[in-house]
Length: 120
Image (tube, rainbow, N blue to C red):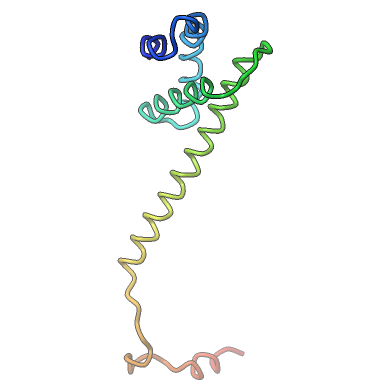
């Protein structure tokens, strides 16, 4: 990734690329701790650095904090997306397995009046 970065952004960013190399493993471990998936952690780490490079970050000596903030937000976004996907899959499974019965078609179903009258 670092070679591509230098090739894409030029030699003037060589110092920044060295900083990225130093911080990459830290950000990767942070992402892995949050999502518990190696491939997803790698994707989130790369996305973190891409967003950092495309941002208008002004050097204030807090680069690592900014990187962690980006990574945290990406992990939260990933978590929300995966929960939504799990919910959708579960909903689709439930829809497939549930058989809806039309009470008008089922002559053995008790009437609503019978059910309500059984309650005190």
